[in-house]
Image (tube, rainbow, N blue to C red; front, side, top):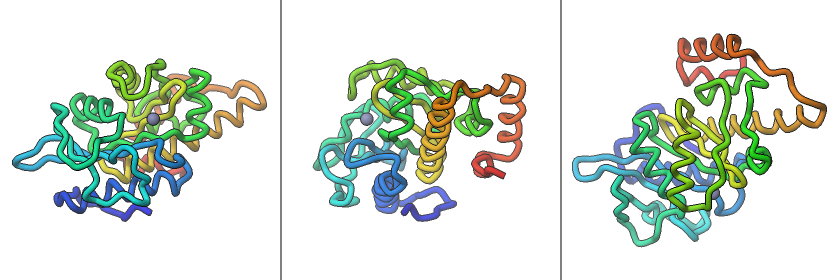
Length: 230
Ligand SMILES: [Zn+2]
């Protein structure tokens, strides 16, 4: 599982290990299977401005920290392997969003089930606000690995820390790898509850006013406590 880390990672080797641990943690948390998702973390030092991302084509259990690929925001690749085919939306999210320090992309079963129906997650439960707004949007469909997919994903993430991708999966971002993974797990939990509610009928949505109260409480208490269900 992912190690607890409260301080920003300032060592590239440690961040490579943390990216890999998060990819393994994604599968251990049952929000992803096999090699279908991908994970990245922003990495900056005096000589580099970009991110570290899981490589394409290697099972996470057999990936070494050295095989994590470094990419600049300009799209230059530094590494022996090619980056995940979804590197474009990782790059574009880091370029657009100063709050994104890490990104988890998963083909989580319940979130993806909703995404296959082109359904986002409405305010059926107050925890939907954990993603930053009154709902969690579903981005339009676009072919995997394309700039078009990146564009619709960035648009769906406007004022949000998570979105679904039509006929594909989900994205969650955070101020750390731990936060991004925790949010991805929360989104999958919400997707499952919403899906279950839909088996009975249409759940009763919370009003904009009630969601705004929750959003304000989450802002007041800070994101780390906002994931509390108490
Ligand atoms: Zn994918």
